[in-house]
Image (tube, rainbow, N blue to C red):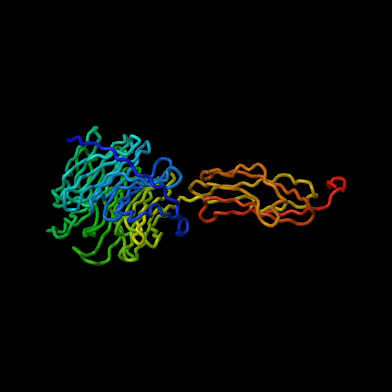
Length: 493
């Protein structure tokens, strides 16, 4: 048990404009950070308000800095959390989690190269500013994953290449305690992923070994699983052998504390270039069951899994052959996959309290950090048009109410509500309760309009409504009315 030194890092803030991109129907894609070569090793978490938090590295000019981005303020704000001025410094294998107070916790490895002594580090803004701390030093290797339990205590899994072991660290006692997870296999623990269940028990997926030349028996190439649910560490084989040598496993726990793992499988041993598949393993039935989710090519290099409130599985992954970001879910009862973007390495997935999907990923073509979500607003209006009929000149019609609703899964932000079209001055907007308002999903607001012609004839206008609906950023309500002659003494002459 070792108490580490604390140091406070002053974050550098950069305000980044939202940059929407065309995406698959129902998805919205944004560039979060495009300053230099940014976005590798990204990890995503969602807080209780549905705000997005992403950790990632900035590898511009060979200096890898730990970065953090959030849209909690309504627009993306980027912060440098940990910086190293040495060329080719490494801040990698980054993992993020959010606690019950919406504070952020990040684990990462820090050093000069994969083979030199590195430090397992931890950063948090729980105090209001960023504080970094060394959890374990002299760690050769890579792969770290973080989770926070119901008491906001931190749990980290990581691989120590110097001992070729899977290791685990926690601050549950108030101080950092590290331990080696007991496993009879050799050279294990690479590319681990950690989750905590409803009883604050730990579940870890990992591979054994991390590198095929050390393989002496087929058993060492299986997907492995470790848990301390019984009070001590128990390990077992969870899935197929021949896990692809360079990429990740990902673990999640459902409402019944059953385990779900996404990973990559290839049919060949060692460094074969054969096709790799996206695989899924679960012990939901009481024993391990595996299935192929996507075998449509060399897919699943980089995969991340999340579970929704109905225990449906959601997986983001990378199609190596086509350089695509892909998404798979079994929410319909069978696996459905779709391509979301034509570039999408290093993907990470998280769900919000409404089961909306949020994915961060690295655009290797442009060196950008990007973000995709199916949490999008959807603006509707009723009625969509209205004919006021015939109204005497210089008179006003009774007001007509228009209801603007948000049938989407994210907040609808309404900008201006205004009259436009051929004859806007023959109509008026009254009781505008919608301009500059934010409408929650399933919420609505109303406006009223009247027809008050100043001359005779048929007139047309539009009520324009600007919003953040990606499909209909400008919605128009059609208005029509006819001005007719009334009693001369009431004409205003």
